[in-house]
Structures are given as C-alpha cells and as structure tokens.
Length: 343
Image 1 (cartoon, rainbow, N blue to C red):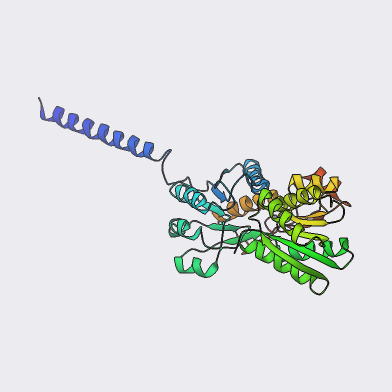
Image 2: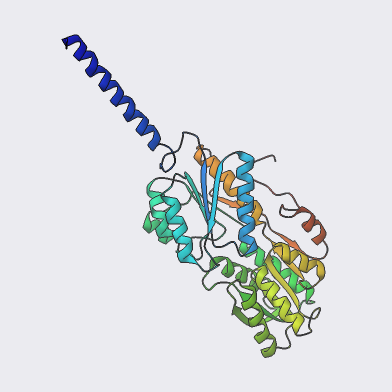
C-alpha cells in the first residue's frame, strides 16, 4: 500500500472516531443530563401533600402559570401534612435532576434544609413558600432563599378574631383548634387571633388537630363536652373548621356556635354558603403557585425578585361568598403583584 494511501486511511479513521465521540457527547446531553439550555426555565416545587385541597390548589396554580408562560413546572409532595420523610425524599430526587429553580413548602421549620443543601451548593435559586423555614438553621447549613412567598398569617389570625368577635357579639367563650405542633403558620394564626380577641373573648380550650378533618371533629367533640358553654371556635385551617362544623351539627348546635377558619378551599366556601361555617380567611393558594412560577422565571433570567412577596388574603362570609365562589380559584378582589406591576 502506498504511503499516501495509508495516510488517507489514518485520517479517515480519526475523523470517524471524532464524529462518533461527538455523537456520544450529544446523546449524553439529553434526557438524564443535569444541564439545561441557556435561558431554559425548569422549575421544581415540593409541598406537603395533595390530599389537602389547599396544597392541591397551589399545585394547580403553579402548573397553570407554567403552561401560560411556556416553562417546565414539576410539582411533587409527600403523602400527608406531617410526612416530612416523604417530602424530603422528593426534594432529594429532584435535586439530582436538571431543574434550575426550586420552591419548597416545609412540614416544619427545619425538615427541608438538609435535602436542599445540594441545591444550594449548585447555586440554584430556592423559594421558601407559604411556611417559614428556620433562617438560622438554614444559614448554618449554607442554604439561603431568594424570596419568601406566602400570606400574612398573623393578619389572617387577626381577621379571624375580628370576624368571630362580631359573630359572638363581642363576648363569650371560644375554643382554638391548632394545626401541627411547632408549625409556624399555625403559631402565627393563633397569635394574631389571640391578640384580636384579648380582653373580649375567653379562650377556654386550645387543642392541636394536625390540620386534619377527622381529628378536628374528634377534638371538637371532646371540647363541646368539657365546655358546653362555648359559642365560638377558631380553626387554624379549613379542613379542621369543617371537622368542627360536623361536630357542632352532631351536637345540634348549628347556629349557636360560630366557626371561623383559614384557607378558603372550595368545601369551606360551600359550607359558608350553607351556613355551617361562619367564615373563612381565604389565602388563595392558586395565586401563591402562580407567584412562585413568576418569581422563578425572573430568577433564572437574572431579574430582580423581592425578598418577600405577600400573597393576598380576604375574609369570606355570607356577604361575599357568592362572588368568591364565582371567582374561585382566583382572588375575587384585585391585589398588588410586585412581579407584574401594572397588571
């Protein structure tokens, strides 16, 4: 074989090998890769569970906004309100995939910090949604949050207290159904409520019911037996409010015991319309999901996002429940959105 022929053969072999290598690299860049195209927005949101309609509404709002904006949004959750282990496993799995913005609703003040460490180490922006994550513990772990997006739970409790005061004529005995022990939203709601009714209503019972409807009914049954004189109940969320309403109905006290709860889920709105629930402080989780996606898009595109974004709240009672139902899941009154000024 001539020398020039051998050279041409070696050159052809090298070109073919290089082409094969480039094809292999390109294939690795698809599917399971941890990289994303420049400017591509891929959002992962993890919340507590989807059995609670509140978190399902947050999911629906995020997915609807993602579809509207043409970006990828994946929303996952644990199996229950208290399933911190399941929630953490979801975060850990998503952290190994090619998402470039995270939004997380914790079960408690610290449970999500450890699985978020790999996300923070990759400099991926993280949104703290709905429930405050402990800032000191986060700082020690090297985890920071681009923004907190959630409603003002202290104000929600205050509004509930004011509404119950009106319903009860400014005096009487009241019971409080708490959420999960040490969960900050429930603490803030109870604090706001207690401040609003101080010196006017007598709080005779305070019991946790884990944001669970069946537990709330059982707890309320016991409270009504121990304190038959109560004429008001504040429940820190709607599912507990619905459980309390069932207990009150079973005791033949509908119309005699006023109940105010927090969240504004569909079943609560229907209960307000039916008169079994006196009112609910709607927190519009659908809007919260929309805000989370809007904030992530800004962050990935290196645009400014406020460090705190307050989601809207409103008292829903018999005077406006029809408007609330007609507008659901959107707020029936406008609110200032710092991510979309002028809209």
